[in-house]
Amino acid sequence: MANAIADIEVDEDSEPITLNINGVFDDADIVVGDSLTITAVSLADTLVTVDYDSNSVPMLVFAENGNGETDIIVTAADLGGLTVSDTVHVSILSVNDAPSSFALNEQDSVYITMDNFDSDSIVFTWDESADVDEDELTYHFTAELIINGQLTTEYDTTLTANEMKIDYQSVFDEIYAAQAMLAGIEWDVSVSDGIEEVLAENGPFTVGINASDAVLSIDEELLPDVYALHQNYPNPFNPITTLRYDLPENSIVRITIYNVQGREIKVLVNQYQEAGYKSVRWNATNNYGKPISAGMYFYKIRAGEFVQTRKMVLLK
Image 1: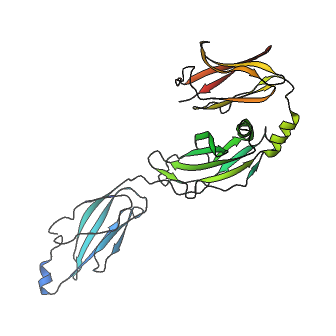
Image 2 (image 1 turned 90 degrees about the horizontal axis):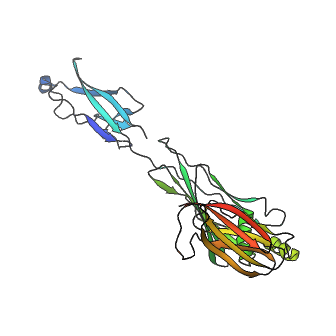
């Protein structure tokens, strides 16, 4: 053997490489009609297998998504049966693979009625993605609630499961507050392994929402029976949330936001209002229009003799 074959270093999923054996094996008998046969054996054929090119020179073929180290034993044999071998060390470097492609699942239009608006949810599902590197995958769900052609609520959530739910009641509250009956939610999902992000191959989708039955039913009921302050939605929120409250009679209404120290942050409502089902949105700003910091806050209603307080959490 005249010269050793150089060791090889490649990235994962590399194309096949033909061994450079020029000048490696030298046989003085070749001048009198001898010839050499070159063979190679991989010591880890789960990483590298050996094939031969059109000139019968060994060629290394790398396993898909395989990485690690192994040796290739290259042997030259002449017609007389004499052999000589060389060892080639092969290093296959790991390269991150993006998550596999996936698709969103279509769903029928949603009908919100008095029988389901406070119990059911819109369920968004999509196919699972896979990761050959066995990295943990997270899904990023984004959506926009559109009412009367206007964006009213944005949803932005990270999940480990391939499902997202938005309850009917929160959507209905927005529709009713906008004095509408119809809406739509445009949604999309991406998946990430922490390094690369892949969008759903068929997004975004839009699901239609028809709340006419519930709206008309509530309008027919006219007035609530008792005063009530409901839990805000979403909660936790960032940066917009909706507060609902019920007025069985005309009242002077004051709704105030406080921090955990009891300091007044924002007066949302301070006016005379007619009886009915009401809602107000808060964009996490104070009385001066400045954004506030994340944390726990309290919201309090005073309407006539009725007083009630609930808590909520702002995320950043």
